[in-house]
Length: 87
Image (cartoon, rainbow, N blue to C red):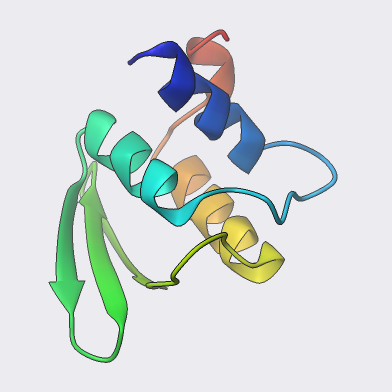
């Protein structure tokens, strides 16, 4: 995982929740972590990581805060710890 991916991963777990995280950067981080990402109907993406599945809204630019919180919860459920990927 390169520096940019690690920085995005840490931004997902930052407090307070950031509303300035690029959607495509998050998709690249998920793929780098080994997730299978697929487009679904209704402007959503499906993510399968470590046996866990979730669907997230596809946005044009930056993620809204509620979506960041959902992705953070999903990554925690999948056993992803940002401390394992130092910036």
